[in-house]
Image 1 (cartoon, helix red, strand yellow):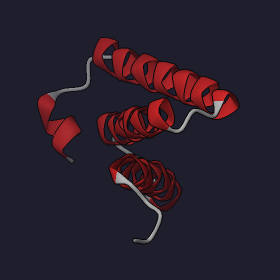
Image 2 (cartoon, one colour):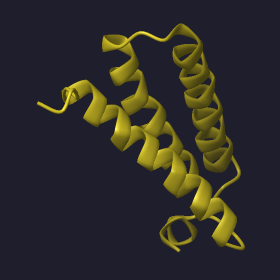
Image 3 (cartoon, one colour):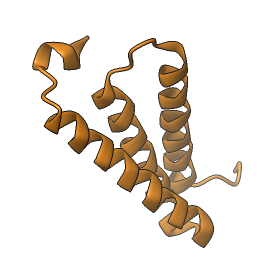
Length: 89
């Protein structure tokens, strides 16, 4: 056995989401806020699942803030009137 359980694999998927969102933000001139914040929110959620089983309180608090900021970004994008076509771009 390699020492990793399912919760660790879920955490790695969350890490990949957050890294992908950061890369997306870096490489796109005008990133779609729904892709950016949605991917960050998914990453925070997956990492939180992992952290519930392998508790690390500072990281758990960080993911709470990360998710809150992502939710704020999604709400802000919705309120700014992004059209469906802009979300798909």
